[in-house]
Amino acid sequence: MVWRPIAGRISSDDCAGSPDGKWLREPIAGCGLEISRGVSHSRSRAKDDAVPFPAFLLGTLTLAWGYPALAQPADVPASASPPEITVTGRARPAPVLVGPPVFISPMGEPFRSQDALSGAEHWFAQASHDGALTRDEFRADAARFFAMLDTDRDAMIGPDEIDRYETEIAPEVRVLSTYGDASLARADSDGTVKEPPYPTRLGAGRYGYLGMPEPVVYADINFDRAISRQEFEQTADRRFAMLDTNGDGNIAREELPKLGRASGNDDHP
Image (cartoon, rainbow, N blue to C red):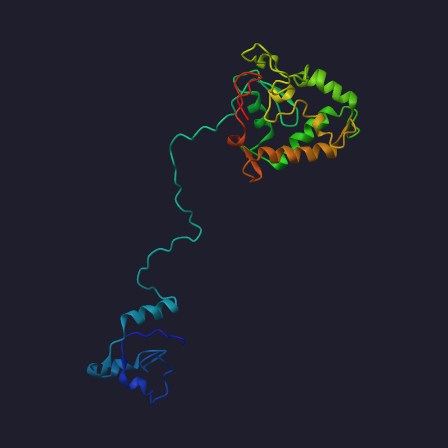
């Protein structure tokens, strides 16, 4: 329906058509009335025969033809951004790993803290980038340490490189006795000393989360006295699964065993 502007009134005769043919009429929806282009013919009609033109319809017609209409509320721009909300308060501090200054990582790398933080916290902070240690981050940390040990770059950690690891890089892993900690020996009421071995963690097991005396050698899956890159990667995946206690693919600080504050303390599983 195309609406036309009109001034004044529309008479009831306009619904039947103009006899002089001067009007171009179009139907008005709902009432059968017609409006014309030009000067309103109804001005010459009697006032009592005139039908008042609804004001709301006039406003609609004038808007359609671009005439000034009643003031409308200003539109809100579609691109307007919602108001910013500022929350004030003190953020909860991130937890830190408690433990001794000396720490042997799950893959065997030693960390010796020179500040108030534990060695375990130094390892975790450098391996993780967002507060949780993912499987990929654990693998990347293992690959970095493997490259450190593989001095001849043959993708293998051979006997000479293992010896260098145990004597120069992490002498803490060396096990002097398979009997364990002699201070744990106990005597019965007759004075007979209990036979060894005495249960305790040995080597690197005294300084880490896993009770492995020599974590690098333990990665030798096929027992050929050398550790390939593939063996080290497979070992990393297994050790990650051991520490990811809830199985969600991330290791949070809260999941890790509790370490004693003194080196060699067995205050953890």
